[in-house]
Image 1 (tube, rainbow, N blue to C red):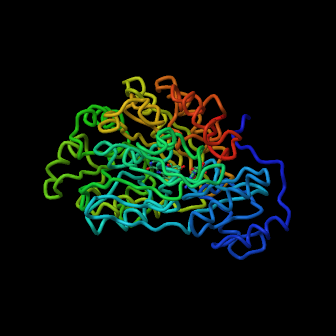
Image 2: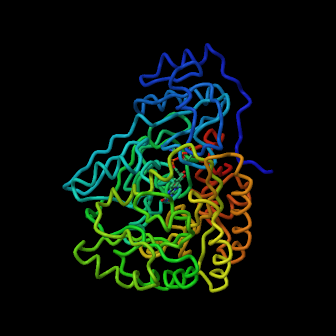
Image 3: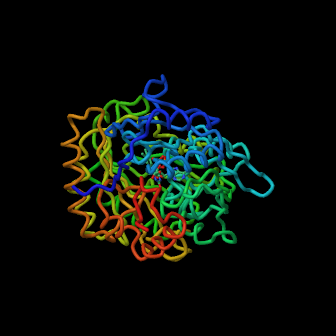
Length: 467
Ligand SMILES: Cc1cc2nc3c(=O)[nH]c(=O)nc-3n(C[C@H](O)[C@H](O)[C@H](O)COP(=O)(O)OP(=O)(O)OC[C@H]3O[C@@H](n4cnc5c(N)ncnc54)[C@H](O)[C@@H]3O)c2cc1C
């Protein structure tokens, strides 16, 4: 199978690592250290790699030191933000990881409604810091995901229809480039780099901090509404049509799930397949019930968990169901439309969702995302209205062949109805052709920016753009 993972052949010696460690203000974690077992793992439990050294940077200077070291020793470092990427780019065998987990502070400027977010912060850190001021930015729906990786691929969440992608809300970023320089990327400074890091992934340097635009979002009206699985076609057709012209403050996603044996789920639904609309309304919370009426009327409601909720609580509602360390296999595509034929495919495979961890989600990427054009930032599918993700998850590796088979069969049946490329943050190890299809018409310009900022492809532990 084609692999996008490219390890360096150079091997680090003990002397080299000792010398690196003596120049690092944070921690340099090595295989004999107590923290090593935790530090070497990423979110996807299928990834089992053993780096030679993990530099847990204290600041941008540590990042510069580690980048210079990697370049001088001829190794390709892994950069770790939240460690959520399912391919496991954030760890490697025998090499160097530059881990930003200790750089997670978030500073809120209430007057100007902006946030300065360090490169290792998660969306939970972001929401925690911004919420007391009644502010937020579009981020992911699981709070343990890294701000950096998610933003560099685009960034889709509950606020996306209203305020655009996470990357559309970036004002500037501080970046350590392959030659070890610290530069700022914004509309006015290094605009080519600024264009590329908003959708082009981690190809261009290490982002040590971001400056984000914030929006007034505090209490919202949201949560999941479950419907019987046999109503899937009606509910999905409703969602497709409704979300096309719903007000910007209304968003959500469609999903197939098996109801978990959780205390908030009535016992008669435990283990039962269902379809769901997981909604978020950011208008005045007292108007939420009225605003949600159309959604509740879409079919016979099996379980309604939608109501007033603080935005950070909605954005972390599913964290406990999806802890780090589970086995994950994903396949996804953008969709320009969801045709009735595509709905028939969903109705064939969605109800077969094999266990309560696995899922299929369809996220809307219309609304404010489509205020920009495909070439305005590196995010390349602004003409797509949806992105679907079919996700096989299990606690047990032995079950993964069956989970993977469900994902692959579902994806293959649906792919002909898709826009042809994938959202880079949902790509697995799918080879160069899929990377090119996902960056699409922006690929040549991304390669040009890569030639400018990383001509030797130091940063290649990612969905790699060849210089
Ligand atoms: C449970 C779960 C939920 C998710 N939900 C959403 C969602 O709601 N919306 C969405 O859009 N996506 C979502 N994703 C996908 C997510 O956007 C990607 O997995 C993303 O790559 C994660 O970023 P990270 O920083 O956590 O991961 P990492 O694995 O640390 O990094 C991902 C990539 O970015 C690079 N990188 C990370 N930090 C930096 C940095 N500071 N500078 C330079 N490069 C860096 C890494 O080298 C790697 O190539 C989800 C993923 C998971 C596992």
